[in-house]
Image 1 (cartoon, rainbow, N blue to C red):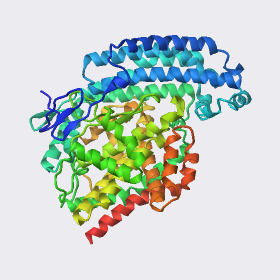
Image 2 (cartoon, rainbow, N blue to C red; image 1 turned 180 degrees about the horizontal axis):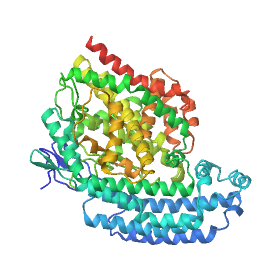
Image 3 (cartoon, rainbow, N blue to C red; image 1 turned 180 degrees about the vertical axis):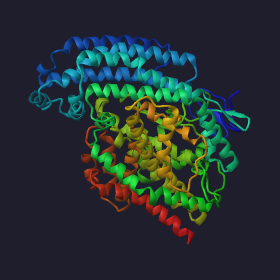
Length: 606
């Protein structure tokens, strides 16, 4: 029998899950569809196929000949098809995430994905033909009613040099069901089904990872060793997933003549490679004065000469064990949001009251946390695995930030609401910072202040240092895969090279830690996504400094930035705050905030 967590009992109902932390909310997906067998869902699948075919019939071969008004009408039709497909896929995927080990849900996911792929195949022509429109014609077509959509299509046309023939693009579209998507699904289902033996107790992944923040060092070690043992027995499969996906990407990149494995991510993020490189270089150069220095302090606090991997996220010895109930977590985050602006709290409140959050740890549920935007005509949904830790409260603040951002950006419409990943973490990290600062301001006890500062520094290290180390690992993995098949030991070695560099000399690495790359979903689902977290943290640190300095009309400028969604480039969005991400000093400003917290912690030692 799989136990999800010690002393965690639950009774899942339509309205919530009863736990020791209170009744945790579950998703109400009826805002999308009433049930998987709802006639509306079946009708929409049929309608999607009809609308996509009719769109292709009306516009294929004609895009360059459309007047500005006709182009605006075509885009409006395309957007409605996009909304219809997005609603269907969001419902089926969210329902699957609630229990990835349920064969019926897995079958529905696979069958629906196949139908969506078939239905939208006629639309493949759209971006390909669009990118063949002569530049002068393109500019004229977007001088009228379609002008507001121009940022979307400018980003699409950035792919022009890397576009394949219509036949090859259609093949890649059709083949995706048995390509990357199939390997993603194998990874998810394998991960959800893993079991970990912790001192004779069988646990799932989320509960075992949770042990790494336990107050009991013996318990933390047992969790780490259980993770290592199970990962080690599955590294062959995980190595196969990574080898296949990296090779598939390399083949597609070769055909597209993309210069680097990272280039497609930079293009989709609408960010210049040199900006990402400046971020990466600034962070890696800061390892000694940030992570190395902080972890040396932590080892001293814990009375240890060396830290083990199970000490990285350990609570401080002075930190009293505390479980935070759901009602308190809600009040904490909404209070912090409201302290910044009542509007921010109002935007977050419906998530709690209308079934927009699924919070409990339950069998088969996807691990981790996310906010899914669904479609601009509905609303986002937040997934958590809430276990009452202080970090879980920060995760709630983080994901609600995403949700609020997605709600505000939805006003741009389906095509313009999606925010490039570089800015997608802005509201989430800002929400965390608001919550942290509100709690810190209420703290008068020096020991509690130290605990809070240390926790925040660790979160920032996890967001900036760890994610850039992840990015370097991915860069190394894709470069090595280009030279040939990688064994599990090859991948293990790449992982350890970045871990030792980023964590510093105070760490010893237990045998088995070399396999901990295996469970990171971003490497599988979204190659090179991870730098977005560091980008977001640096951006928010700089934004928060402007807020603290009393920048006039900051709240109005902040909401305007979130409402812009993907309609503007990061340079344009940051200009009202006097910030420029292409300036290396920008990243130093963000890193200096982390350094300042470490300075304060060191001063407490004196």
